[in-house]
Amino acid sequence: MSETEKSEKTVFDVVEGLTEVDSELMKEFQAAMQNVVEETAETIEQRRLRAAQSRHIQLKC
Amino acid sequence: MRRYSDVGCSLQRSPFLLRSFLGGTYRVTREGVKRLYTWLPLNSSADLGQLAAHISIEYSATTVATKLANGISGAVKAVLIEHNYIDKDYRSTYYNFYAKKGQQYRPDCVRLHFFDETVSFDKNGLKLGWRGDRLDDHYFGYMVLRPTGIATIGRSVVSPDVRSGAKGGSPIITADHKVHLLGHTLSVQGFPSMDQHIDISVCAHAACWSILRHYSESQTAYAERLTHDITMMAQQFNPGGLVPSKGLEISNAERVFQAAGTFPYLVARKAPGSSDISFYRQLIAYVESGFPLFAAMHGLSHAVAVVGYEWDNPAAPPPPSLRYAWDEVKALVVVDDNYLPYQSIPAKSGAPYCAEDIDSFIVALPEKVFYPADAVDRLSPELFKLGGGLLDLPQASDSVVRYFITTASGLRRFMRKESSQFDPKLLEIVMQLPFAQFVWVVEIASRADWDKGQISARAILDATASLRDDMPFWLIHDRTTALVFNRRTIGNAIGGMRALKLNGMTGTALTRMAQNLRPTQPK
Image 1 (cartoon, one colour):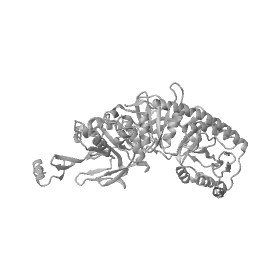
Image 2: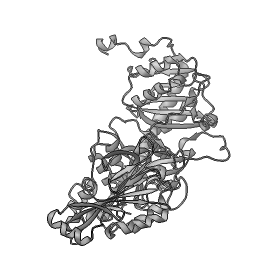
Image 3: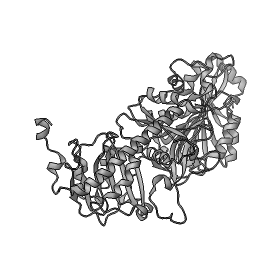
Image 4: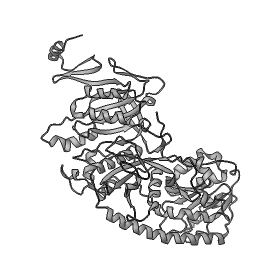
């Protein structure tokens, strides 16, 4: 991060009352999200293959 | 009254005379008497049959009248027939196709305008009269008729409120369309539609045209594309007059949307025989986002534009389970060139086809949507893991999940308008977070909240997040807590997170965000 970026205020600097989050709880959630990423990548690839097969379907009615 | 022979003699001195008699306003030319405006009151739908008495045969007025009688409601009490109308879309096909044919076609169209019972027409002064402030409030849109003999319904924008059988409250994607008529600038909210030409365009062309005309009318970023433009954009080469009638491949439709400046994304259902409910959840998510879809039914070789839906209203509550917005949909609303617009098709099983016959769809996205709906669909149920510790969420078995795309400015506009529902600090966060242009919104509602049009919690995701981003969030909040994510710290999503206790929101109703579509108000 550049010096300019470091000096810029963010919402975390200007909103009062923000507190840290229980990192153990969030680590569990993040682990679950990492599974989501892997499963989604597989689904996207399946859809990509089906889309490729669909591209030559003729629509004329 | 002057005899016709008197009128004929007058031609020697002045070839263009205006006379009003026999229910219309006429222009007298060397070719004969041409009527410009005809007012047709409708005491019943049967009166639509009189269109044929006022419109010459090449416009197939009898066929059009039958379609209108079966498809528009009794709220339409008069039709103003505008003859010799120059229609830009028809002209594009006329210059490039019809003018080159051996059979001679007219270059002009007829335009029908639909009004309610409060509007009158002074045929002598060519003046429309109405009750109330705005003529727009009594105007239901227009339909152009092409002089092509078959499939003559051309560019049309008709209000969904006058479609027969329209379901009150059904959300439909619409835009404001300006109409210039007799010195008035009218506005009608609707979705464009037309019959396919059968020769120079087929169903897929008509669906592409409808969607792109909606885009150009609703957003200045997109240029207007005429009917023949669509035919040309579909191919790498000029297809001439024979190839378009053979249809389009789905790849050609993608090409049309790409050439129009959008970023088309083709979503195909998984192989037949495998359950793919996620496909339909994404379909409804994009429609709820305000994106009309080019939907292809492979078995029928047919394409339509999906432009809305109807919510289901079951007599008994469904059994407890995690449900999605798609599970609450009874029917989709489509623009199908074989019917008048806003045809309702059931979600599951029905004639002539149902939503489950849709095998693939193209959503013409703007550039900055990188995070796919498949990821949002898979991620949404994981949000319940935040309940019980960090957030106060309903039980997954008692919840309905809904997700859609909106702009960050749209989100801010909604929260500003409904600011009484939110802790001012939450508003402050939303106004100051450095959102990208587009965000995915995931709303979780308990069954009780869903039935009241309310929600229990909302997650805002970065629509430009990478597929591999395991924490693509900007903000997640319920009524008591907000989790704010710092997307400037890459690789340390948890370290950059903060929480905020929210005040004053436990007693308020959190309204479902539904501002992209227009609820139907049947007349």
